Image (tube, rainbow, N blue to C red; front, top):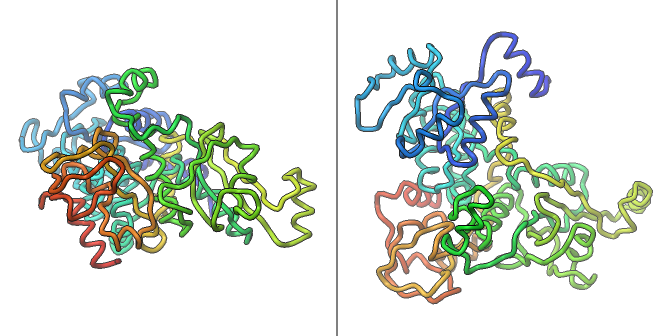
Length: 438
């Protein structure tokens, strides 16, 4: 079987392309558009962003001129919105630019849709319409995946298309190490990612505004990094794809550098922090931007071989990928879905871990929750069955929910504490998932 690079070379030789639609052109989406435009055998033929005027300058900064863009506005017939006219525009070399996140799923030329929005609700809409229209869906929206990923996987399989989280984010990078170790029957002790900033549960978009600007990202996105939510979401995604579980709610999150990972991520009886083997966690230290896997083996000959290969004396050994390239690696998932009809990383068999919603401050009845990266809540990983038994609110459903009860800072929010709008697509899909999959 030809590899991805050979497949792309062949496609280019045939003067064909993988046609891609991108939803969301923030930091990640813009990077993907720019990168795809520089690669062989890829073509960005549609971009969607909810606010056309706000993002028009971003489109121009990616190298498009007015003559390159064909605007299709939602709830409007401006420029003509029929499918035939859109097809003619694409065939003439124009790129479709729309404020409808679901419009790309109806463009026949689009082969793969990429969700780079980061919004669980938007992600639900993009994925369900894409799959329904038999488009492959590659998502950077791990927030939506950890809420309804099992359902999206099932629907995609039934439709003969691929639903997958993108290569380049930590869950996919970590799964590479997991697949390597599991295939070789190595005993997995712990797997996780590095966190490259201090953990501060009180962080919010105001306190991080200046820091976010220095880093070139939005205050809301930076908040989700600093308050730990992003790490919880990413490791829940990995957990659901592999069956590896957290050792405790919220994980341990020790301060540890690469050279000490095998010591810290070992059982308590061996001087480490773990109550059990086969866990997911994250480390604060020089591990970032990499991912790690601590493993062992009871075969003496393998231990001697590992010592000879400078992996140490054991009993625990380390696999370490010192990087993840975020959106830069996304084209690999696009190509893998297109050529092989295979996902990069997708839920294994239902939900294993849940990201629950924790009050960031004292919250009062009637308040509106602002979701991931905001002022009111943060996420924490928990075993799915335990979260279900306690009726805890999944973080991906929290944005826009209205509190029916007061909730104290640091306490988990339950379903009975909130009212969720009947218009919420992700809430409807989550309920469907629970009916079909459990």
